[in-house]
Amino acid sequence: MKLIKAVIRPDRLNDVLKALYRVEVKGMTVSRVHGHGAEAETVETYRGTTVKMELTEKIMIDVGVSEPYVEATIDAIVENARTGDVGDGKIFVLPVERVVRIRTGEVDSAAVTPVK
Amino acid sequence: MISAPDTAWVLISTALVLLMTPALAFFYGGLVRSKNALNTMMMSFIAMSVAGVLWPLVGYSLAFGEGNSFIGDFSMVLMNGVDLEANGTIPHMLFFAFQGTFAIITAALVSGAVVGRMAFPAYMAFIGAWLVLVYAPVTHWVWGGGWVDHTLGALDFAGGAVVHVNAGAAALVAAYVLGPRKDYGRQALLPHNVPFVLLGAGLLWFGWFGFNGGSALAADGIAVLAFTNTMLAPAATLLVWAILDLMNTKRVTAVGLATGVVVGLVSITPAAGFVSPVSALVIGALAAVPSYFALEWRARTRLDDSLDVFAAHGLGGIVGAILTGVFAQTSLGSPAAGLVEGNPGQVLSQALSVIAVFAYSGILTVGILKAIGLVLPLRVDDKQERQGLDLANHGEEAYSTGEGALLLLDDEAVGVFDMDPDHDKPSRFVTTSEEAR
Image (spheres, rainbow over the protein chains, first blue to last red):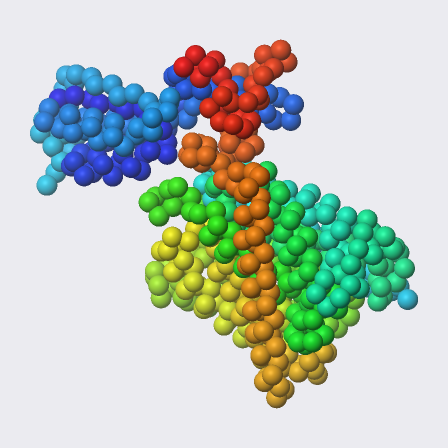
């Protein structure tokens, strides 16, 4: 089991979601986040006050998947979140010690397998 | 002879009509995504400047100067002769100001077709050229002693053809020339603030009492008739719209009703001072149908008239203009009788005036946009469109939290607005990380 954390552009989210559903990955948590990477900061001006926006709005997707789904999930995100410009984001793949499905008490792979 | 009551009412009406442009900014601004909210609202606000300056410079003279039957002349350029002497029962200068607010809102209406992709400098150039080359002559045809009024005898109380058919035609064509937004038809592009849309629709209705009621240019019975009809027609439109919504989706939608308010107001505009209140109810009710189905249909096409200026203003204006020919009553003070008083020819006159305005506005709009396109980029580039036009065109965000904003001191700010090496035009996105790349 792996926890896949992907940070992507907000405007790519819909395409990424569609692609994940296509490969049968349907359980995830999506958050709006702010972050800083290599992307160009934007300069904004509000009546004489000029600021450099160091934080860019991003979307974080957290997906817990069993081993057979890891590559498919990563591919779906990479293919659909990529624009080619700096700031497309990152994917982090983390090992997972234990997963529990709260409703049934199922653990590990059974807990991340979609309910039929 | 100047009448104080008439002057007072038209003064108030002028302020009411000017309020319609910020109202339109809220109506349009709520309908777009949050990343384009400021840009969309700015398109309306900038019309108050571009049209507001061109009107005294040359627009008013071309619209209301004597000239010929097609266009005015340059006799009143820079407000030459626009003084405080009586024009009817109000000062000439007041008539000028009242008409100026119409020019502003008409230019702003067109913006709904080009949101989310048009470059702001090109937009400013466009509405300036459009005001002089399209709005001013069309106004002259209808209200300035031109051929639609004198030869054709078409009726247009407060601007069904001049304002709404005119803007609707320009919008349809502008959407086509610019092409759709990149993600149009692939993603759901939803309104980001529906309460804004309702606020805008409500303020538009309020301002429209000045638009129609003030077009009597007097505080008299015709003003009262136009005022009352402005209250009643949208009420009927809303009811029919709600029923259509119920039949279609089993729910009455807020964005739908806000649109219905506008369609009803548009439809009664050409008829307001010429028809009975019961006729106004009928006009408002009938106008809901074509606009409702045009909206449904348009969203399934590749024509990205993003905020449905054509479906709401173009079609609403066409229906209103033609029904004016049906319901106009000389007994209520209309200069020409309509079908209900046994004059079917009036319907034909109305239809011809609509076709003339639509064709002229459409053709000229293509020409203006193509000409501007030779000098300025009409659209922002794809990257900027993705990022949102608030940042690309204005360097501001509608809903910034301020988190992560570093204050740039004067010496640090030097050069941040310079030319971007990636693009052959000024950019606000030059930073160290891009330079290092």
